[in-house]
Image (cartoon, rainbow, N blue to C red; front, side, top):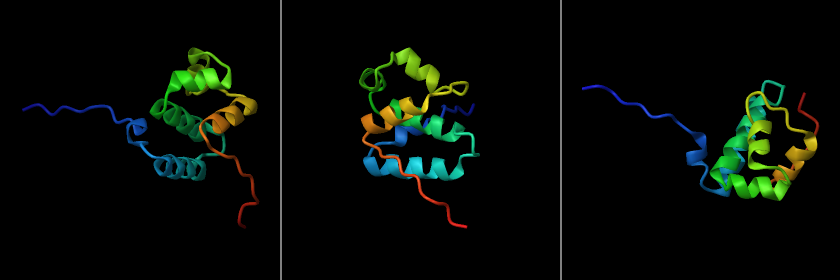
Amino acid sequence: MTERFTRWDSADYLETEEDIRLYLEACIEEDPGDGSLIRSALGDIARARNFSALAREVGVTREGLRKALSADGNPSFALVLKMAHALGLGLELKPRAA
C-alpha cells in the first residue's frame, strides 16, 4: 500500500479569532528579523478569511495582495497596517525585555 500525503496548510486551522491571535503571536516571536514569517502569517490569515474581500477592503487587487504577501513580496508598511485593520488586528510596539 502506497502512503499518500496531502499538503499541510496552516490556513485550514485558523478557525477562530483566538487561533489567529495565537498563530500571529508565535510568528512574530519566531520571525528571523526580516518580516518574512510575519508576511507569511498574514497571507495565511488572509487565506483563512475571504482573500478577495480583504484585497478590496485594503484597496488592492487580489493578485496585488497575493504578490505582496508572497515569499518574494515586500508589502509596504501602509499595506500591512490596512490589512491589520481590515482583519480586526492591532499593531503594538513596545520595548523588548532585556
